Image (cartoon, rainbow, N blue to C red; front, side, top):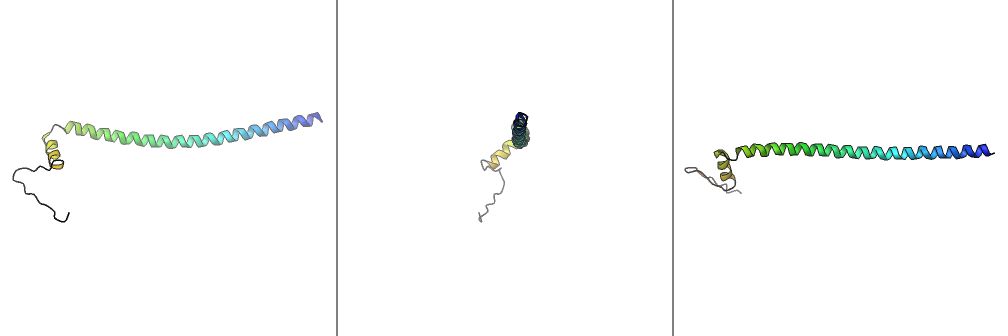
Length: 92
């Protein structure tokens, strides 16, 4: 009779261990998937920031050129050169 009780106790411990490891494995897989999503998002952010840095570096190198100054004067300040004709769209 004692041998049967030990068998039941060990079986119960084995079943509990398997359930615990299965639950832990499932949670770790979910955590790994979350980390993969975060990693992909960070890689995308790094790429976007790299592109932005390249654009700013290009703009920095062009900032002292006459073309850049003229472009800013036209776009931001609304300046025009002498002798240019200005057309106003009355539909706007």
